[in-house]
Length: 65
Image (cartoon, rainbow, N blue to C red; front, top):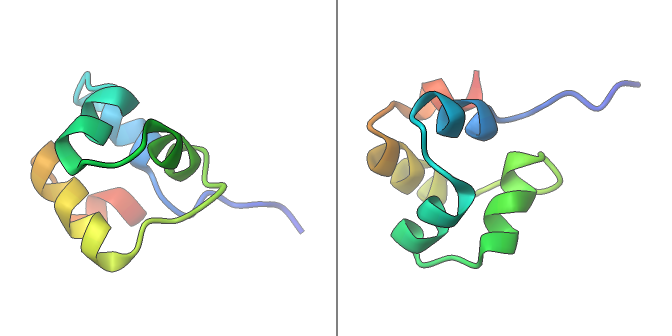
């Protein structure tokens, strides 16, 4: 079975011209955590998805579709 991407965080960061480091600073998270989310090796919980969406000016749906 293929490992399908569960979130679009990496794509949305690129669209918004933002970096993993910038997002880590905004959320007060370790950059390694953001990297895991961007590569879909780990997933942010719903609370973090909401905060990410606010920081990037998108909806939660934009991050997960």
